[in-house]
Length: 87
Image 1 (cartoon, rainbow, N blue to C red):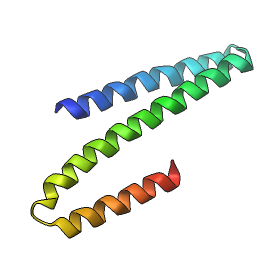
Image 2: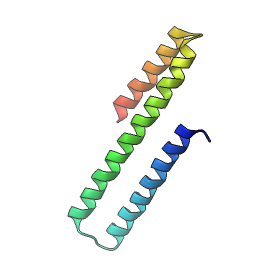
Image 3: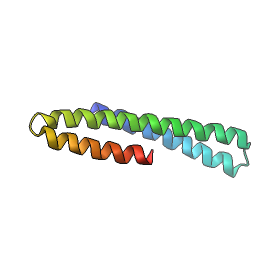
Image 4: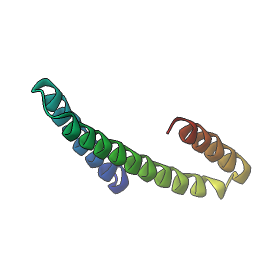
C-alpha cells in the first residue's frame, strides 16, 4: 500500500478505535458531556480524513490532467461537489 493510502488507513483505524470507545461510553452509561466531546473529536477526525482524501484525489486528477485536462477537471468538480454537499 502506498504511503498516502497507508496514512489514510491509519487515520480510519484510529477513528474506529474512537468509535468503539464511544460505544463503550454509552453502554457503560458514561456522562453525556464526555460522550459529546468524543463525538466532536470523531467528527473532526473524519473531516481531516476527508481532507486528506480530497488532497490525494486532487493529485491524481492533476496527473490525469496532463493527458485529458477537461475530463480531469470535470471529474474533480463532480466528486468535490458531492463531497461538499454531504460533508
